[in-house]
Image (cartoon, rainbow, N blue to C red; front, side, top):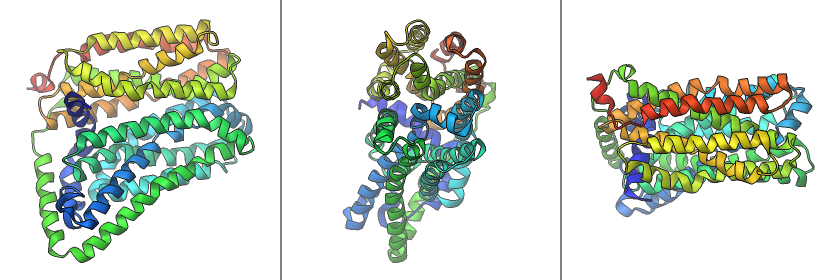
Amino acid sequence: MSSAVDATTEDATTEDAATKDAATAATDATESGAGSAGSSPTAAGHPRARLLGWLLAAAVALAAVNLRPVVTSLGPLLHRVRDDLHMSATVAGLLTAVPSFCFAVFGFAAPALARRFGPIVVVTAGMGAITAGVAARSFAGGTAVFLLLTALALAGVAVANVLLPVVIKRYFPDRVGSMIGLYSMALSAGTALAAAVTVPLTSTLGGSWRVGLGVWALLGGLGLLPWLLTLLLRRAGRSGAGSAGGTSAGAGAGAGAQAGTGDRLAITRSRTAWALGCFFGLQATGAYAVMGWLPQIFQDAGVSTGTSGVLLALTMAIGVPVSFVLPNWAARRGDQRIFVVGLAGCGIVAYLGLALAPVGGAWLWAVLLGLSNCAFPLTLTMIGLRARTSGGVAQLSAFAQGIGYLISIPGPILVGTLYQRTNGWYLPLAFLTVLLVPQVLIGLRAARARHIEDEVG
């Protein structure tokens, strides 16, 4: 990974989660741990520290793999779930909006929870919620219970999504770039894996959607295990560390104080901040609509259930290489307007193709949708470039993502409502196509080479 990618990804993602609502200082002080945990789990070369470092790296990767199957395993089986639970298309659209709602609500709550309990404890609880929610929803007897248990799993995803970068920056301060790369790849791999294998796995296990969704709880349990072991090792280290723990606490508190310095910006007075928030929300609307409805679009056109899952997996997998290359390209330019237009153009062609020739060009439309969805890493890159300091990046990122996820909630629900009322995909796809117009216009404003500090004085 190049230095530009490291810089933008670290600022826009790690700093966002690490300093959201200025909670990093308390988080670091709470999370000071055994021996060398105050700076890096591999510092000082102690066998326990090395073991903790490897274990924590594995925990991060396995947690990242579990952050998207809650959503992408449901898409290919959504029609079976709807039929069995007598779920309307509008309610199914609500399911596709639940991720955005949970990410907004529980994402805002994650820093406060970390301040109280520490990020490792909260991420461990989040992994437990993912595992329990995925397992329990496969036994749901009605739509309301299914929605609530899905929300439980997504609450775990939300807090882990916010705090995993905190863990990376706190315990791997000299390897932030490589660990963020590991985190990103694992997240994309989990997204594509669930989309690709859910249907064939369900068929192999007897054909029940309950088994096909519930089996992902095993992956959640596997991801939970290293976090539990990390907690046990840290507690054992504290009990025997004595003065070393005290030294670590001082280092952690000092690092937290440093991270928490800087003036609070009147960010709501920044037009660039609002533009980034709206751009984030519009691209998230399209992304979650695609993630939730793309298999249904293909299936209604005559594509088999298994192939529709593979097509969704292809759409998700396109983001793996592009998410590494695109930030580097975007960071080299003074502004990113060409990328805003180019990615939206891919989306327009893909939506028109799905409406006019969904089967004939299915693989091409899947690839173009994957490229269009790469507006997400572009947004993170622009967040990192639109502020002069890491503190400004953190405040901008918290504002843009919080506003953006709230904006994205109604879109997937409206897609489901339009689908139910028209019994077809022309109007929903037209809506998603038209939505790309304000995304481009607002994105052009957000992509200009400006700094929010200049706008708010």
